[in-house]
Every structure is written in structure tokens, then in C-alpha cells.
Image 1 (spheres, rainbow, N blue to C red):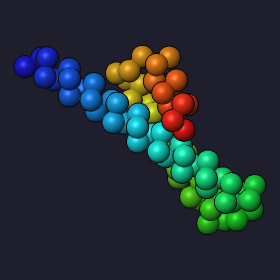
Image 2: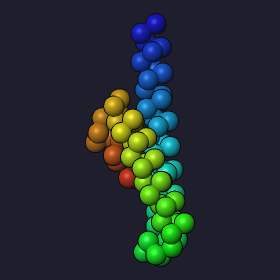
Image 3: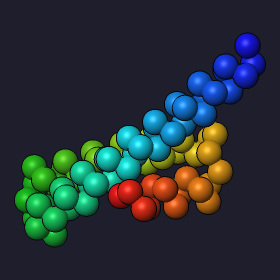
Length: 77
């Protein structure tokens, strides 16, 4: 039972890391569309993507080594 629990935890961490990477891409695109945060709707979108990125990244790094997690997150995003 513990082995399955560890596998599920690890899988959930990697899924969270992939979601964080997708939100990071959304953040980068939103910042570009916000035209240096002068376009309010895109600026709000960028802030939301940024907060979601931080949430899912912090969730993933509870189980994944920080060096590995950051390298994968930065490489994707």
C-alpha cells in the first residue's frame, strides 16, 4: 500500500510540475500581450497565471527535488 501511495504522490507531483510549466507559458504570453502591463485585461491575466504557476510549482516541489524540478520547469516554460 505504501508503494502505491508513493507512486501516486510522485505522479501527482510531476503532473503539478507540468501544469505549472503550462501556466508559466501562459504567463509569458500574457505579459507580452499586456504591452508592459499597460493593457489591464492582459495584465490581470498575467498576474493570475503567475499566481497559478507559483502554486503548482510549490506543490510539485514538495515531492520533487528542487534542482530537478526547477530545471524541468524552466526548460518547459
